[in-house]
Image (cartoon, rainbow over all chains, first blue to last red; front, side, top):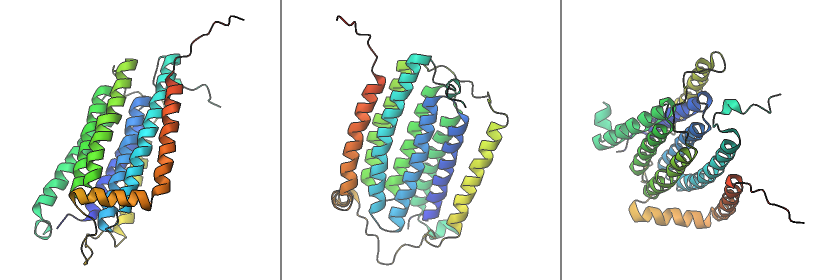
Length: 101
Length: 185
């Protein structure tokens, strides 16, 4: 008998929390994108866990789409980082404050 | 009590996956060098793949390794080395006073809220359905997932095709170096 779903759900919640903490404390845009990946993976883990618990393949199909969206997001995000680095020679988000009100 | 009610192998797999996931995740947010953070990210992604296999998502585990560890992290590493930003970042600097404390508070509240929601629900008690699992293993998992994606989720699947094209065109446009064209007229 497999371990209860709650174990995996708590693990996913902790992973999501670690990713969120990194997203708001790190200042390198590259590392922030990596923390975003951590949070997306936490959600994927939750989807798969519910897919097993409810015996529904829809959860796994959702993970499939989340992966596609994550790939697209990383592609565009890294493109933006490269474009910013060309102009400003930095990836630190603290330096990008021209639009401050 | 725990060991008697659940199979020991599944507990071992869970513990191994949890160690991989949490070690990697903490590495991502604490290591100063972006290259090391990216390598820690691979560790986390591998742990998530282990957790996928333990939960009958065989195809997704393979995709996790191939797409995430094989493509996305390589893309990260490529950009890190392309930009030459693999130097240390000052992790200790706090632009806002008390930033880390507030972040920690918010994260603890989030995790606490999620766990509280789970603790009040009955669908996470770990009791499997009596009719057995409808999820198939191995090659049948691919068939089941493929059938689902190409019937129930066909529209979403087609939309991802458009999304990927838009993302690729956008990335090319963003990363293109602007050339100054001499106008002859």
